[in-house]
Image (cartoon, rainbow, N blue to C red; front, side, top):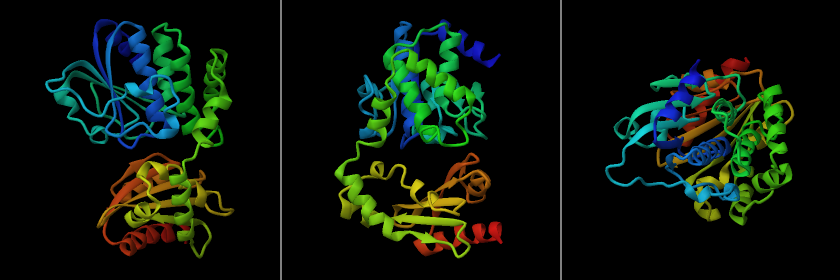
Length: 316
């Protein structure tokens, strides 16, 4: 069984790198921090890396400052755990040059790299898979590890609102609460600690709302000028795609985000009837059924037209 193979790798090695995808969300940060702290509790030497900083709203997690965005020269590890990444490129590291063995742990489809590949698309979050591995290691999570795992599950289930919030997600969350996690502390930090920059940015982005003639998809747009005007960063737009998805009748929501002069990232969210992962792959991106994304080159109008053509065909 793959989990037991991972346990053996943990038991038989000492130097570990733990890394998740760039522009990390709650699951990426929670999974990275939980595995890092647990491995350290087991007496291992561990470096936690992410190409981007821990978002402000997640810095309440104990020891979140352990994550680094640079590795010392000539770094080398026995094992690299790549979490929630989808593919190696999203780590922004030359992973294969840094370690002997790559272990991929993910809940996204089409994530099939690694010397060991532990992927379960039925799991609500990568944090769930980390929990399973830690239980197989017979590790009793510390409160710091439990908080990180809980945040990963909470974030990727949308506070247990999404279809991915299955029986296992509630069972694990309950077990983490038994270990001392305060649900209010985690949720209030994650959802009710908005910075002035985020609120200014939201006030500028919401007027860009466009609802299709069918009423079945809707989008909002953020340009580089919008970011500059708000004095904000990309981090402050996390979760904005949920606003068009909250509109009655909308089945697919889009957040169109400019990343350079002629490149836009399109984030898709579905209410469940539409597989936006398949839609995103047609545009050169990826993701899973209810959440996906793609980077598209062109002007804003060209990007909007490309996406609208696909969606209009889908809803015709």
